[in-house]
Structures are given as C-alpha cells and as structure tokens.
Image (cartoon, rainbow, N blue to C red):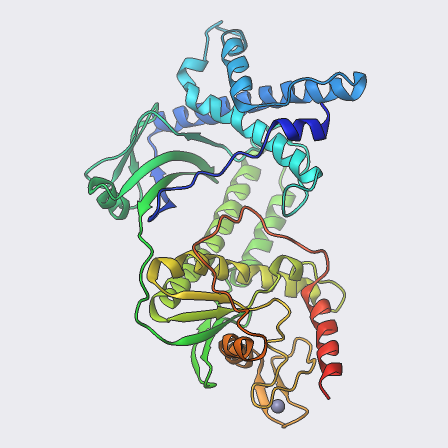
Length: 466
Ligand SMILES: [Zn+2]
C-alpha cells in the first residue's frame, strides 16, 4: 500500500475530548486475584496476544504483498480488521487437542483490544515514517511472545464496576476481584455522579496484576487559589526541587530520594546472580522475579515523591516557573568521565516528570504554570549582578564579576522566579502561562545534549553584552 495514499485515506483519529469541566484521569489498584481469577486473567492476556499477532500478520502480508507486486490493498482499519477477525475466529481459536473453541472464554472485548493494538502500532509506524508523528522514531510493530509480552487487556464495555464496600472491583469475565488498596477516592465520585468509568485495563507487573481505571471526573477549572506567590522551581539531581522566590529567598529544598542509587548495589548483585543461573530454570525465574520486584519498588518510590511534591507546589503557590529543559536530550550526553553515572542520576531524578504533572495539577488547584524558555541560562546567570558564565557541572561557583558564591540549584531557582518579570520588561510578555493539561502524546526530541547548545547560547549572550 502506498504510504502517501494510505495517509490520505486515513486521517488521524481525534483524541477523546471530555465535556467542559471534566478531565480524564487514571486510577490504579493492585488486584488480589484468587487462583481461578489468575487463570482467567492469564487466558485474557493470551487471547489478546493471539488476536494481536493474527492482526499484525494480516497487515504484514498486505505490506509484503505491496512491496513484492506493487498491488495496493486497503489500508488497515480497526473496524475492518475486527470484522475480519470476527469472521475468522471460529476456525482460528480452536484448541488443537480437544477441538474446543476457546474464544468465548476470553471474551470479544479483550480480543478486539488486541486487534486495535496491532492497527495502532501500524499507524504509529506509518505516521512516524512520514514525519506526521512527533517524538522518537517508531519501528514496525513486533510480534508478541509469551513471557516477553507486557501482558494486558482493556475493556471498554461490559461489567466494570466499583463495589460499594470499596474493596472490590467487578470486571466482566473475571468477576468480583478484591483490591489491595481501598477504592474510596474514586468510588465516592462515581456514586455521587461526579465520575464515570470509561475503560478498565488489567496488566501484569511482575507477578502482580494491576487494574487501571480510565475515568472522567468533574473537575471544573478552579478560579485562582488566592495565593499570589511567584516561585521558581529548579528540578535537579542533587536536590529533587529547589523552590525560591524573586526576592532571592530559598523557600524549600526537597531532598531527592534517589531510589535507584540506593538500590543499585542490590540490583547489581541480583543481576549477577541471575546471570549465573540456567536460563529458564526455576532458580532463574526466582531471580528474575526478585529483580522485577526491586525495579517496581524503585519506580514506586520515585513516583510517590514526585506526586507529593507537585501536588504541594500546585496547592500552595500562585505562579510556578519551571525550566523548559530538554530532559530526553540530556539523557544523550556523552563524553566526559562519569557521564554514564550522571545520565543514570538524571534518569533516576525523572527531571521532566514534575513539569508534566504540574501542567495538569496547576489547573486543578487554581495556580498558574509558566515554562521558561529552554535556552534561558537559569543556572549560569549570577542572580546578584546578571553576569552569565560557564561552570560545568559543579555544585557551587563564584561569579567572575561580583565574586558572589552561588549554589547552583538555589541560583537557578531564584533566576526562574524572576523570569516572568524580566520577560515582560525586556521583550513584552512572552511568558505565556501554560493552559489546561494539554494532550502531549510525545514531544520533540533533538539528538544533541542540552548543555552543548546552552553553552553556545551563553557564548552568544556573553558576546552581545560587554
Ligand atoms: Zn555576579
């Protein structure tokens, strides 16, 4: 199928837009499955994988056919392929030993989800190839394999209900499942009509099953919270966040929990242990599970701290200024000694995540978020005299002009707090506040590291101002 033709035929599906004053939110609960439910769940995951692979094979045949003969087939669409799948499933989904048809046990929802996954994978690849998709280049979707697959299925219709005891979730095929956490936060909203469940995804995370509820929640945009404080927030590796105001006072330094750094030696030990074991053996699987569990713990600690931080910031301050740094680009920095450890530290701090969360939380709690220009030299500018100089990765530095000694993070936060003002003075109000949580599926991702470009910019600035 010709790429340009195909793209003309199929326009990108518009993302779901909730009614005004409602937002789409996700709520996750770890599930406490019984042995029976665990088996049913595994069956759903396997069924979805089968439908996905079948769809991908069908699409791939079309593509290969086009490459060989030049004969175009219809571009893949979810509705057409689901129809094709439904017509074929009676002959496809048959147990080779018993001759029994197995698809009714899985349910058409999970299977249709597999078809959708493959079609979406195809279009992500196609759009990425033709430059219509932002972000990292996407490859052609790959076949899923048991054991390597991120097992999951999504249902959008059928039973998906929170039980009034706030400890159970009813999902079609699985039945009534106990949750590890209390579901009170969302159950209350659903009962009072302020929330509606759109979909439920059950995925595997190591040995755990996690249910994610996609919910629309009534959250009218808050009027201003009344807080008038303007603060700059510098997100970093040494301290997770430094909060300062324009008067040059540091209000808060939030320690970085560095979950990966704390567990790194344990993680290395487990990885060494696994590498000594026979692949696929019981022992190997045991180490594997321990590693997965440790990774999950690291991630959970990181997520918890960042959520706490961003909620507190959005609730207590009127205007928050953050750096518009290119975090993905920073993870590409190479060269100097210790660059690898530095990249690991950057990844551990999840630098872009606070900004992403603030984008939506600020509108929830009635504060305003301003993202400074990504070339704004916040850490290289002396906040006392305005001199800009290079100082590498050092923690503190001395200004060549006024001999003031600065802590890198404190200085950056103070400069950020002053950013909106200096923008409106010099250039006439470029500091546009970020509106509602925008739909960012992916962002641009330039290849080079931000430090390189920043220094070039700094040289230019330094040259311009005598
Ligand atoms: Zn200075």
